[in-house]
Length: 296
Image (cartoon, rainbow, N blue to C red):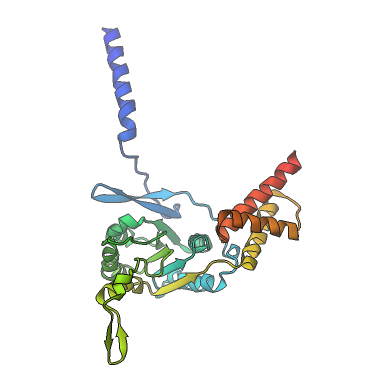
């Protein structure tokens, strides 16, 4: 009898081991006095906020060459944290130029004053009213962050976001704001065919309804910030900054020279881009290489 029971228990354990990966992860209770960030997860017809462990080591001063954009978004965020009127913000432009990093740096800057960050994917934007409902009675200030927001041709989801921004967030509690990043200013691709039916009225050129509909989405954001590709000088300034930061953290003695600048330019040419992300990656490569030489 004991042998049969043991065999049954062993089979039950084997079945449970196979089923456990299919079960939803256990939900962790979210305490906003301890959690600085969370991610919205959709589950069935509803969803939940999963707390995230975030690093606050990125400072606003680490963002080199985007002073105007940094100051405008920082001022908007200061207004928001202080309980004053503030705008939803769209950060658009070239990839790797610091759009997402700026939002993370603002969290580090204002976390002590009650700012919190919630990541939400583009495909889950229709859940924004549910997220807002969960945050309405909290004492903290929440930035809903949608990274790399864009819509492909033929997708109608952008109309959902338009209605959400107009119908939900603009009448949302004062402690909720939306920041989004995108490589496109208008978020939706514009086709040549969209411009075929423009009309001339009293000497003025009027766009057709298709163009107006697509541009109207970006108009829902009160603050537009543009990020442009780096010049070579800008790129080298960022490389110099990050090499200095990483070298100081590791106790590495170094000096900037023309050879280091040439290596950084070659690194960027090999990757076909010249931006902040590329500069940071090169700095990690070079500092790591020098540290390995020192240890070797």
